[in-house]
Image 1: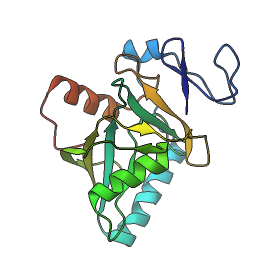
Image 2 (image 1 turned 135 degrees about the vertical axis):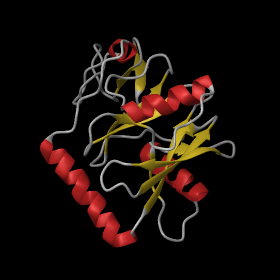
Image 3 (image 1 turned 45 degrees about the horizontal axis):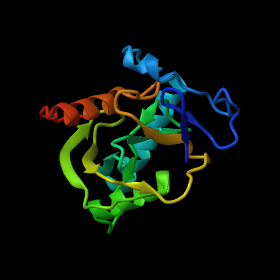
Length: 193
């Protein structure tokens, strides 16, 4: 579990006093100033398209979940993957034979060792036009989630942690920032992710 030092900077276990570890630390103030996250490079865009094409042949259409997971203090849980830039809401694909609710529980457990205290609430269904444009995302809100064990970095997750809603990490994706703003301000969700 990432600990917080200073102003919302995630600190991995074993980090030094300045909050440095083997991964990059983030200045939460930068994201509050509206700086944009890094763009995908040519290789990363190609890899994403290849990944989506593989899913096209495997499923025809993909359906996934993303979760605004809040702890008892009202902080949101975010993950930074190893294969795409930026901080994201936890989530992933719904597997054949799996319900959306089961996918929420599974993805929260896999990406953060998180458990839900209450039934997640469906906030909206979106078409994600990135990749091949056949990806649908179901957005859920889960309150009072708790982390039952630390989530250490691995091949999929580079970093993760809880962040105050007014101190999100540098590099939060535009879609993540928009979904959080829409939810916090009670705005209507668009149809596209």
